[in-house]
Image (cartoon, rainbow, N blue to C red):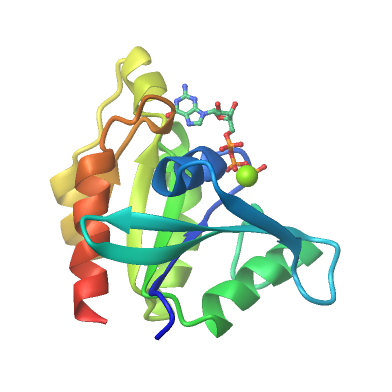
Length: 166
Ligand SMILES: Nc1nc2c(ncn2[C@@H]2O[C@H](COP(=O)(O)OP(=O)(O)OP(=O)(O)O)[C@@H](O)[C@H]2O)c(=O)[nH]1
Ligand SMILES: [Mg+2]
């Protein structure tokens, strides 16, 4: 049986690839998505005894694709039947990034919202009420700092919650 898939999506430059490496360690396969020049990295992650395939996608702004990169990200989301989608956002730009979140929620996808760059948000003296966000969106929301691993334990627990259900 193939491993459950965890797909990382989000706008460019929000920390998807750092999170990918946190989840998979050093070994990843990078290849062109079939029929395109877009590179997609795939690796294997482990949480306890559960193994899963992790896929890092190129940055995207909307489910309706404009660029080749967005088309690839959309294809991976809609055609590879992921068990979990991690939408990674820069917590400093929460409002601007929620558009894509709502599109993914409306598409009925198994979504976790990952608020990355919490260190920079804190440095600005800003706070986000995670509980309210979770209630409004009705999906798990996990604050992390990808570059120093903060929040990874909770993120892995939330991933397991979904993988256990699929
Ligand atoms: N301060 C801070 N910087 C971060 C954090 N996570 C990632 N970065 C930095 O943000 C930059 C972008 O990270 P990437 O992982 O390459 O972002 P990406 O989403 O894969 O970008 P694309 O592949 O271009 O879409 C890098 O310089 C990271 O070191 C974080 O939690 N805090
Ligand atoms: Mg990347």
